[in-house]
Length: 494
Image 1 (cartoon, rainbow, N blue to C red):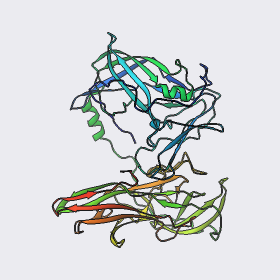
Image 2: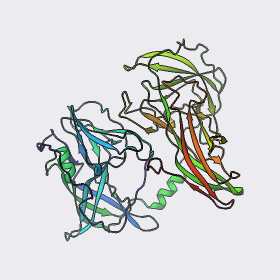
Image 3: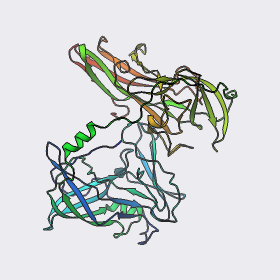
Image 4: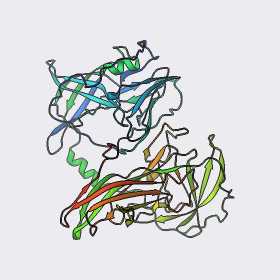
């Protein structure tokens, strides 16, 4: 999902980033060739448009910079043993592992302060200077030389939303590129008057030493022209307002095959292992008629040794499918199948796809663990929305179905495949009345949001002992002004 980020008007003074002093790692300088990591630009001359956002001007900056891996991939693995433990990141080089300083990796969103960007006007005066972070798992990664490997094994994107991620793998395939960020670490908009500028981008010293970059391979000089926008903001707004949905389907009746797969008893063998993360993104909202709701996000992920793969087979002339769960070994061979309930077509606005029933259940419990409310969300479209732990064995780093459009089918579908791959999670946000918890009539006090995977036991998995998580919340205030307190989980405030 694209995000528009703006930066502050104030200049950023350059100081040595706190905690980034690098010591104890001996890495030989890489030769100035395709053998080592390099910072490269798509072109020397850059043009940026200066926009009026209604509350001030800002520049839309795209420097076209990339980190390019040499003969060996650039790979980093970050993990934590539990939510009470710190994140530990290591650079992987064959059988060698180099632990990164803590200041370089403080979350699972990527590397902190990779580059320093310095912008000067025609008089040579520094007008902007800032740092940028870096996610090696670039969405637009491509190979940069003909003899580079045909595919990259590394994931797309770094975790930047779910606070309860446990492990991540970041990488740039040998001979491939990963675009760097143009957004300052402070994430605020800044303005540059129309005119000419020079830009120097330098990979910061800790990373130069870590990756073995020479000074030449760590520096790029660019010419920047700031110009007026070619299209007005008003024209863009009108264009967006007249866009239409091209994917609309009318009701149809189908004659689906009646033959169903031959199933095997779910004996010992590879299985998914569904686990629930603590509820996160918890908030309080007031709706019309003085109704109060607790909104939250809930993630169920697969920590097993087989993907959770459920195929649906449509019943003739009905908006219902029979669901079957399949099992796969480490080589990807199918080794079994069992019935797993049903899938149903959901024609409501905002859905319009096939839901697998009984995947998860969300409850609100009192302090004594007795249920006082239940989310109306009972059917789900499985999708790999969150990379929860890519450091576990057999984790799928590049899952295919990562949003609802890739895995949930259409009204015309005679069959559907829904998958939750190993290491991946499926997150649903409960922020609609009927799905979020109505706490209007509940007294103040301590409660728990319970996220429970596989509540009806229809799915076969490694263990059901880890299917449930609890997240403490405290309700307070008055009927006219309710309050919500969410204690952190081992210091994690998400």
